[in-house]
Length: 114
Image (cartoon, rainbow, N blue to C red):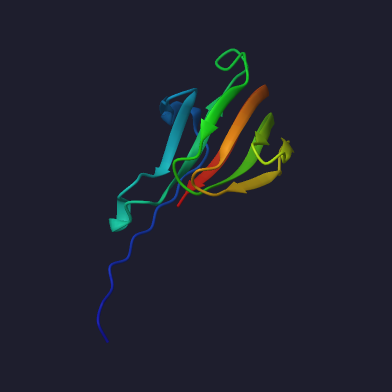
């Protein structure tokens, strides 16, 4: 039986490990390319209403699945769907989805890009 390459990673929510991101900050758990998987990444995104005082548009650059750890945000999709996400809420978007995000409270989101 041939051996296969194994990659594992683990992390706990730790704001001290945050890095600047396009908006807000991120704590990476798995970066793009880790484990020889160029399209897979995950982590915690932290954002506050002060960092995003107005709704912002985002075209998804990858398939993305999110769950809200704390906080509150809404995501409106061009097709008319509106997601009001509170802790425990989750949503998933295909690459290319056109969205508008509104940060209503300081928010921590767990995300997976694939």
